[in-house]
Image (cartoon, rainbow, N blue to C red):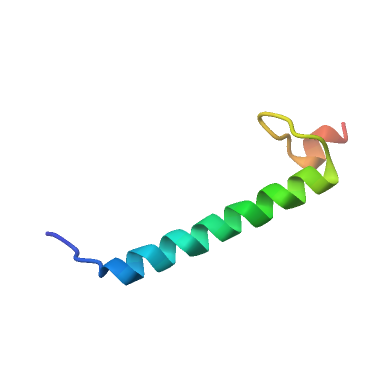
Length: 46
């Protein structure tokens, strides 16, 4: 069973996902220095 996704729809989904990731990374770097992996805020408070 093949699901055919139009090219413009695939590009739109990729752009939305990329913008979400960029916003998340910008929020993390604003709160704390970059750490890999980034700890959960509750775990870091202990």
